[in-house]
Image (cartoon, rainbow, N blue to C red; front, side):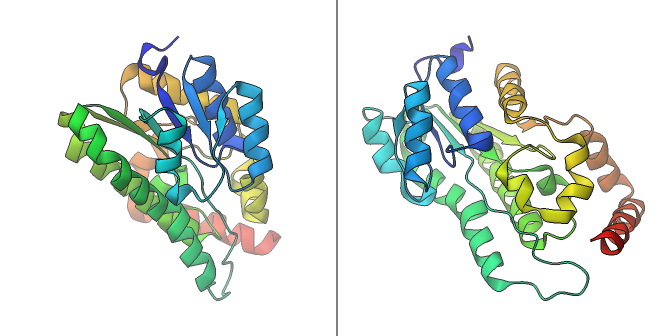
Length: 257
């Protein structure tokens, strides 16, 4: 058992399936009291019933109040997991502005709104934990998915800002950055995901395990695929070489899609 989460009031957004459901299951197994959030009320109820949690369906941007009430007045851990992904640009196609707007709202602003609602209480009592499900795309990028890549960079930047600004006041922040995970979202990435992500895809439970190792070690950056650290280093130290390599992947995708 991880002492830091035993009997904690935990909220997991987008927890009707995939990574969110895996996080909810793991927190419950560790003795936490878990609020399961999802836009799909039936899926939220199903996971909540399975783990002995509480379903609070609805928009992830606006559930902090209801979740706090469901937990008896206090949220200790907030997992900003809900996200959207689109295969929205290939070789020369126009970028879909609706995809950009929705990606920005769900992948970034939902995190901002949750933090705004939680920070006053957390800072007053001197503790709180914010878990952001980002993506390796937030550290690197993803072919064929500009709105996803850019907004995941934004989610990572916001998590970094929270950590550097409030860690001395008791706020713990974790940014989860996996590559492919076997979820419905991976399927939604289409042919680009088949090329880049499927070969090394892992199960959602492995992401939850990586998070709990990071919690025990008090680490900000959670890398369920350890090789992402090497890619991130290459991107930072030899950006032109890294971009050229990614462009070769792009060209391969254009030929095969």
